[in-house]
Amino acid sequence: MRYNPITILRMREFGESVLSNLASSDPRISGSVVLSHPTEADSIIGCAYVECVGNWIFVFSLIDGMVLFAKDQVVRWCQRSEFARTKLGCEPVACTETRRHKPFQALAA
Image (cartoon, rainbow, N blue to C red; front, side, top):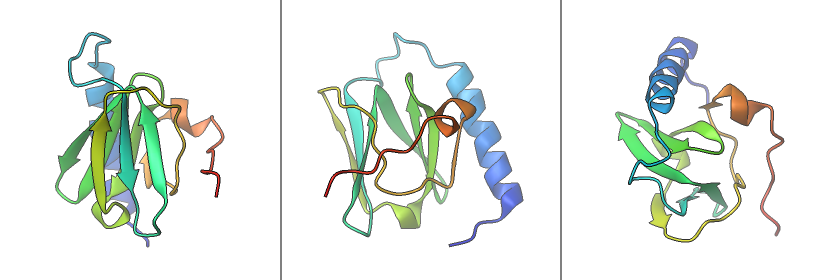
């Protein structure tokens, strides 16, 4: 699906501003976040928490920065207490520079 580039830019700016104020002691960050996609694939993001804004789902991570999904890309999500390495089962709409330079790891079938 195509998204308005100006909207994506604004969402990235918002996400990066939240991320810049994220402290390692933030109680919302624990374990990992698991998001399920309509394709039945899962994305796992370590040391993270989820925040919904309008039609967007932000995942903020101390390790991977900000990852942005549209609500139509995510069926459900949950916070797990155990840490897991980040693997994306779906290409995000946007992400921070720290995430962009890392290769996306597809989940093993």
